[in-house]
Image (tube, rainbow, N blue to C red):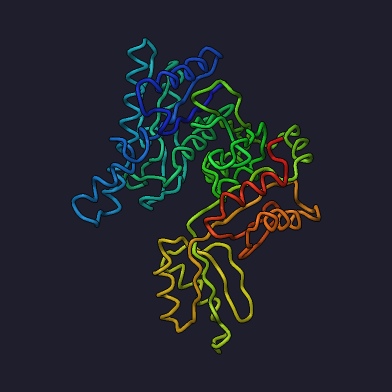
Length: 404
């Protein structure tokens, strides 16, 4: 089957009847352009909305703080089902042939990890059957079914993952990710008012941006698209702007060579931990530290390991747990709460001298202390105090002329 287009609409895009009219127009336009359309939907709205995922989680916890992972997944999967049924019904009442499928009915097969399941494979036969009948297929994002028949959810951003996995399985021409912004920006527009919408980014760049705090598209979804070379386009539900094309075409490579830094991102609410290892004779202490964090399911970031000291960051909410574990290991820990990680991302910096110097210059001129730094081929990270986070983002955005 040719000319298949997968469109994914986030929670804000399906939140109200008025907004859903714009979603329907996007779907109808794609049909008129000759595409067979598969639409992946998130739950309606965000926290506080009646059928939003966070609202459903809160509902479950009202009967007690402990909810089994299995039952929680069953409840969380309801948000997308409600959203999908409403959208399919609206299309039907407007005279369009449409059908709704749950993740399980659409053939999204996952492992057994409730709350953060990974897709094992996609069996899209039922989706194809409806497409062959020229129907618009609405699919619940964020959910699937395990081999033994249990309903599972895919973790935050799971609807993006559903969309790209279906795009690969259906050999779609492209996957469109619709959000409340008009594409991938050079910075968070809530911080930088003149942040620019990027016309093109590579898979690697947008994946790095996503991992470092940009919330436009989930990195797991990008990795799937990159592996199978399915073009992604990030667009706004509320405008007709072309958005951002995510791919690895030659035209993108040409622009990439002219662009040193692609974007600036931020992750707030981090605590820096400095662990003194100079007083122990345990030559495996570094290994024991990271194994202890892993066993406690505490994610560590921004890691520097030295002979007599280990430095890393954890999220503020798990700081107490991390410190308790380290102190139980008889280690001295110094904490620096209320930090933020700033990242300058861009494949164009690879092999180019002077990028770090420009970052230090910009932050120093803005009176911002760098608490820690690290780099890779495509990113440079700096840790700053949270109250300086927005100033740091603005300073780096200006330093690299990203509004041009």
